[in-house]
Length: 493
Ligand code: NAD
Image (cartoon, rainbow, N blue to C red; front, side):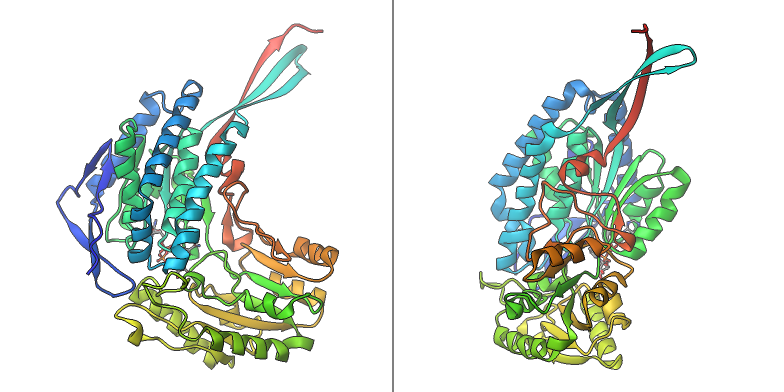
């Protein structure tokens, strides 16, 4: 049995156990067995974390303009310590988040740390002051400038699917902006949060600048953070239901809120796509068992080539065979789903798809023979129309739906007939045509002819129910800034 290091809380500069000494087992998705222990943070711990973050923001120079260079140096030092702990990060991704080895090297660790480097690289492009010139008012001339200041205490509430990536996206940006931070990782992946505390302690972060709290109860710490008037900003990635609750519960204290709530993104493969088969096959929803907010989980193909697509995908999934779900195989990019709860949820969607009249061309079964964990076959449905629930709801598992369209307008209509709008793709032999369609899709990012539109140096976020605000890139740092206008009278001329 694998044993990960105990996940400890980090409050006011100290690694600590829960105030009542409580712990809980972290269950490994590959085995369904405990892989480590985590502190079961209490309300008292959350209170202390908020108090420490508030004090550090209000009473130290952490967020001041004079401290910017020092902040950057500390963030770089922390980044170097994460580098030195790459293997530990990989172990956490593998055993805690259930990432297959071929996925660990990508989104889980490499892309996450690359994103951190992007933040460091673009930090000097953040605008801290803007000159608005002069204007005449009330008989005088007034000089106006804007200064951009850290928003204050940030609660970063994060999910289990790509925990290191999301934690970095929020924590590093907020620290660079000059905020103090309370990171609240998901109960399933406390280690990917705890490591921020361990290494911040080693890097010598001032007490109170960064806190990490978590516990077995999924809502306790999060709700306290959302409701507490001492917290200025909540940056959340997770489910739509919890996102809505955060907006509601944050309203009485008028929280600044960033939300990233997943998607049901469409990839449109037009009839003239030069490599039609490859374009279709690239959407096979296997990477990290489909547990990604930006995955393209609806494949849209022309009605004229729908049967051809069916043959292509049937063969491609059959060809994948048992090429997934082996924890020792570095070529595998798909392992189990995160938990029993998630497995039940995904399996219920597969049942629903059958009841709705869709045709399974691949997968559809749980695979207990792969181990004691939460294995579901790579699954693909044809004969899907866009009004079915399996086409509308985020399944967050290895389930692709394939939908036919009549023409370009119909493809855009189907892509847009979704409450979500996070990512997407368009492929065509005619670049201008693909670009035109991409611009008509109401979504936060679109890859045109396979273009990569997600990386640490560009903004990421959603339209519609996929969220509010942008993470990553300069915009990701600016999410944590407030605008203050300053004006003073000046002599005419
Ligand atoms: P969730 O939204 O319940 O949890 C996300 C984070 O919010 C966790 O840290 C959790 O502890 C915390 N949380 C839970 N209840 C809260 C509350 N009332 N107030 C404040 N914080 C709270 O997500 P989940 O249960 O881990 O997954 C459920 C579904 O969410 C998935 O099946 C999937 O569809 C979706 N999901 C989306 C993303 C994404 O990246 N958009 C990530 C994970 C899950």
